[in-house]
Amino acid sequence: QVQLVETGGGLVQAGGRLRLSCAVSGLTFSSHAMGWFRLTPGKDREFVAAISASGDSTFYAGSVKGRFTISRDNAKNTAYLQMDSLEPGDTSIYYCASYSSDNYYSPRDYWGQGTQVTVSS
Image (cartoon, rainbow, N blue to C red; front, side, top):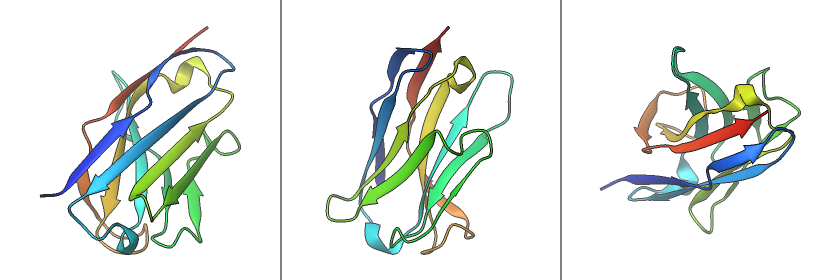
């Protein structure tokens, strides 16, 4: 079975940083693009960042570009989201997802259960 498990969430002050991890099992990790999304109460699910299977290309939402960095370690079957200069508006539940193909223009197939990030002012 496919599993995606997010870790690394927590409570930080504005301007702080966190690194989220997404450990993947049950599929050929290096063959799939990965992405991060977030869900905030009162808002729709929001795309945050994505990375191709090889890691050679990335894409970010405008709201996080320059502050967040997505990466992956295919040897560890793990994707990461480094979040710097955090703002209260970044408070959300963060989810990782695998894409159906090697690029992030393909549909998402699997989702993790999320990790809470809270940024205080």
